[in-house]
Image (cartoon, rainbow, N blue to C red):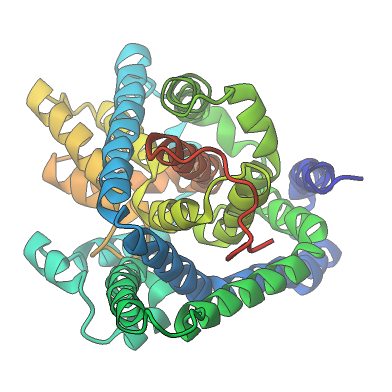
Length: 437
């Protein structure tokens, strides 16, 4: 049985059995099975991935920048990456905002009083929102004064700082090694030690990922079962239209916008591209983590999509934080939905503010710990919408997080294909140097 088939089987069984077992919540045997067996399996799997994310991101990004800097193409690749990121993110937000204004899912919503209220979760989001730094301070802290400290806290909101250090380090390395090569032109040419070392670090991280993937089908079942068991399926009834709007918006972005971008700017067949990426999509949906999916996306780009590694490493590692189309769409939809629920009539200017803030949030969440929900709370407060409204959607946020993460990862792969083609690089054979497969 192929890997993607086993992942899909684990995912479907997790949803069905978890949703069914939700009716037995409170019984000792099922609670023990979930907390003592299934949860540990899922957490061990994720920890195996997360423990190599920091060295993998650093080595992949440094090597990508080094290769691009060595060939004097870093500036063009970075500019194309930013340009297409802004285009894709803007389109995703506009799709979400348009759907909310057309359907108006929050107007006259019934049954809100039956939704469980997680006050502690809302308070935690509020504390994260209050911890947000002013824009000028956020800009300054993008350049870390202690990159080791940023690496330690990379999975807690400091990933962008680590990436900035990797960008600067990789570019500086390309200059130093190019200068050394020019000075020793008469000597026997030899491969520099530092890139070789980083390549070995990257290969080693990928080997750990391969080891973890043997556990993947069982872990996916455990993770999804735990989510369905805790939430049940009833929570979707009251918020069905809201959930449907978000999911439909994500599907339009995936199958309409991405298909157009792939056809027009990458000269690739969208259906074939999506078919090649299906395993990574399942992986992203199950883990709900772009960082956890990054190693698989890097390997897919190199082996299946045959993108040049010097470009895919740069685009995918930066994109895992900066290119979040699904998150941007979700934030735009959620803010306007909660405005409708509380009867807050937003003017055109205020809706434009929602669009702009959602675009900026989708391009990077530096300065706000805890992901996208604190940013939504900041936006709600600025528009006069009761921030406690977030408590209404927390029950379905895990499912929507799985959906938007899948689109985020898909957007990164689409972006890598576009930038590769626009940079004049044909689909690579598996590059013998730095081939992580």
